Length: 88
Image 1 (cartoon, rainbow, N blue to C red):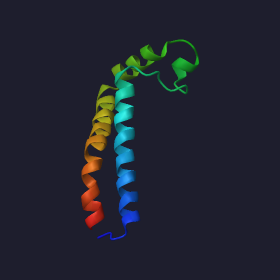
Image 2 (image 1 turned 90 degrees about the vertical axis):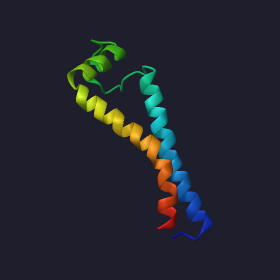
Image 3 (image 1 turned 30 degrees about the horizontal axis):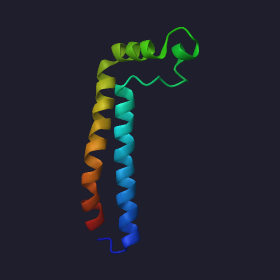
């Protein structure tokens, strides 16, 4: 069990930051945020970012679905870990 209030605040802040960042990524991805600049098709100028993202999702739908599911799970469950982490 963690007794130091500063340590409790640090753990809570870190876990909530993970949740907020995960939700942010999910929201940005859902709104059609541009794909990363290192995407070869986008970087070469051959395909607009939204089309490149759609193509990657079409090629690897299970990977895309699994990564989004894992991100959603991280966003939703990390706040629930605060109490178990603090009280162990």
